[in-house]
Image (cartoon, rainbow, N blue to C red):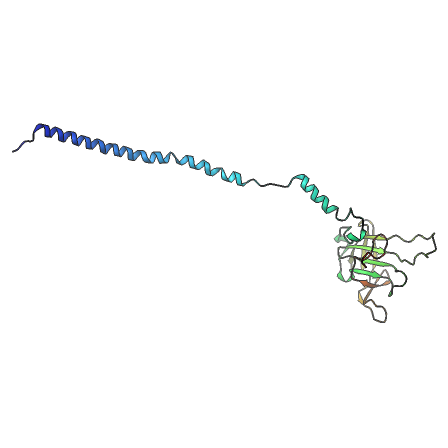
Length: 224
């Protein structure tokens, strides 16, 4: 049998040892790779948790801006020179007075015709406000000692067969008067198509328009 020389045996042993060392080195480097990847993951997570905090910031109006807005709304009906520009919006309607019935909304006159002046007039606004003008015939033109009745204003509402008038919007100062139904007015009686009664006096509907009378003087506003 043929025997290998000793130097071949030594060479073979050294070569196998070299291959074994290379195999072990590659296994160690393969194990280190996941470790290096896992160590990077904690660095990504903190950057994601910062974004919701930045989105949650929402600006709110300052107290100064709010006060300016409220002042503008209030000034709509108080800081004006022409009383005809804010008709029917002076007082806040109160449901305690009763119902606002559409058929009574308008300008009513206590006479079938208009002569040289106006008789008593009621103006009922759909906002629940009202105006009452006394007759312009109450005082003779030359009688300087006569003091005409004051113009009244406030809020109104209807309960059953009466209308409740809160003078100047004060619910502690209510005047209640009987009212009649709104009915057609015959053409030969008046040029105005509808009539009713307030406190036993007949009134005719001059107009459904309520924004025509100056609340300070009882005269027509400009443009009418």
